[in-house]
Structure formats: C-alpha cells, structure tokens
Length: 179
Image (cartoon, rainbow, N blue to C red; front, side):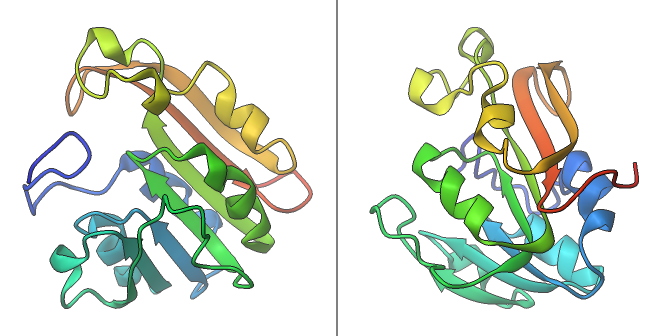
C-alpha cells in the first residue's frame, strides 16, 4: 500500500540528506537502515560499498536487496539489534521515540546517525497529522545530545511534496567532523 512513508514508486531517489552525510560513515562499514520500507537507502548505500542491514515489518519489497534483511515489528518494545553496533544508522520517514536510546547505544565508535522525518507543522500540509508522529522543534537535538551534531535542520520544504521536516546527522565521537 502506498503512503507518505512507503511510496510505491520504485524510482523514488534516496534522500539527499542521507546521501550527503553518508560519506561520514566508515568506508565499507556496517549500516542499519531502520524501517527500510522499499529499500531505497539500503540499495543506494550498498552501491557505495557499505554492508547493509535492512529492517522493517514488511520486507516483501526488499527481496533481492544487497543486505541482511530482517522482518521485525519495530514497535513491540523489543529492540531487535541488542548487542550489535553499527557504523551508521539511517532512519527516514519513521518515528518511534523509544528507539532513540537504542540508536545511540547501537552506534560504534565514530558511528553516524542520519535521521530525517516529519516535524510539527506538517499536520497543516498533509500526512502524517497525528502529533505522535511529528517531532517538536529541537527534539532530535535533545534525543541525540550524547553525540556530536554535524548538521541539523527543521523547516518547511516543497520537494518532493510540501512538508515540515526535521533532520539530524550526528557522530558518536569527538568533533569536529568534515562538512
């Protein structure tokens, strides 16, 4: 089923935010694509030489993806990656706040989190409208305050559709990091 977070268009390009900051991830490193959807980031990052793990409830669109594919209900209260550490964790168009500490703990030394989802104000522009799925201004900064923030944005955009977005790129290591 197509939605704001699981579009059916197989040609939808990966997020420019994700691709911009992927260069901070250790070359050839292990990357988790959390709530991978149809795998646009899994495939794009695998093409850059990363070892990918893709996780989602519905993994049917990940058949043949160059990744370890894990079917998991990510909202059961059980973090399916306990004890694993990643050089990068990518999250787009997905928000489950209880995962914030797991994401931080799941980063290897100098691991990078690249996170992008919807923010407050989006309810006036389209889905999601439920405040449970909209980040408050600065929420990602607070959630990842144990990390070194490389970049953060919260604002309105028009492409690929009108939306309010919040994004962060942060590293589990001392700053400064290349821009």
